[in-house]
Image 1: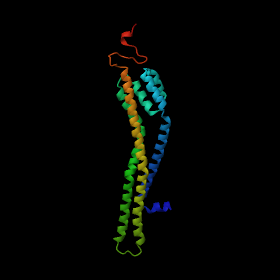
Image 2: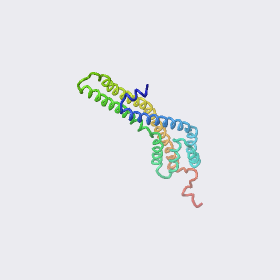
Image 3: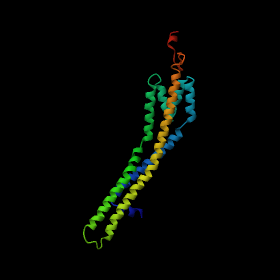
Image 4: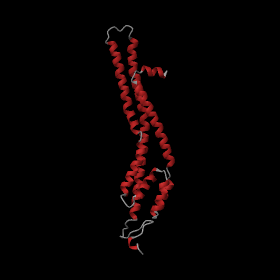
Length: 222
């Protein structure tokens, strides 16, 4: 039944079928990715790292962070590696790298939302052109089936095209929301790390605190 309906939709149904297959493949890949990333999240470890940094144990915090697969912790690890350089740039670059993984495939879903209805509309145009060409041929006797077939072709194509867009738009919004939530969490964690590191670089009184493993210049050589 579905196969016969597909054939009645005309040649434009093949690009719509290809688009639907790619869309479904991306949906399953993105769902698997989110499930994997959810299992990698480790909020207690994140809190422990902040606690270690707050008490000046940066080397220990970095060693723990480098072993974690939590995307937020991996961003913080990159920032701690560059504590003597541009921490903000390191955190930003690491966050963008992690967010690129969340953004992967979303352009395909966005394309499906736009392209699906357009392909359906193209099928509508070709189907109506076929029907009108028969009407313009003059004698209509015995051609009613061909005319209705052209109209049916136009309706089937646009229905399948809209179906692809509907299937893609809800997951697209969901995945985009998850990526935005992750971006905000990375920004919050990065800001907190920068503030904690700043405490050990300069105190309000003008005195300097030193991170674990650092030796003050005036004590070197003693």
